[in-house]
Image (tube, rainbow, N blue to C red; front, side):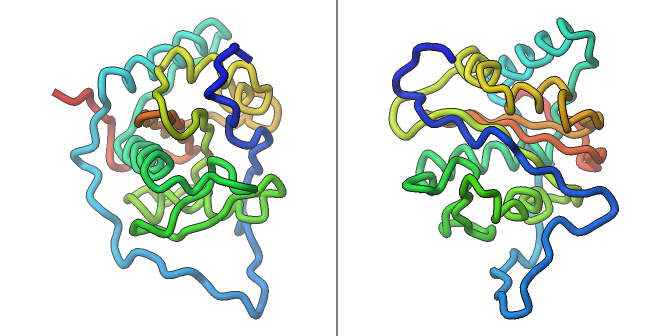
Length: 209
């Protein structure tokens, strides 16, 4: 882990993976389903900033060094990543026992406090479907803190220093299945990466002009 004091809380290390061919969470009979967006926002205009493109390139250079294929940034996943990075910075849902996979109640998505026991795993898995046309599950890695700023190189160093996050990036451990959708978002003190196994029908994300 690089010696960067302000980045003390990388997101949870062991991300749960949804079993293939099954629904990720069985809802108790007396549970209440949070309100869902009535329609997915358009993601056709999603584009990456120069720093986000740098993070994509750094991740792909790292994957190449491991003999892995590069990842293509896709519009839906870039939209989800940028939306969450902004939510983390502006609305600060990551506090107390709620880690950086948490979402605030201040947007058109289902809010949740994501804790280390992964009881709210579906809150992560379903965010791409809530926010975009992407219908597959999504998996996130995150780094940062409120206040200050984070750059692409620091974000990758934080993730490389965490065995759980590193495994997601390089398809290690439980993450052997290839990634076919990917997005990055950087906003103020937060950087996030979103991964999906299914192809993204919204297509490739470009760099903002």
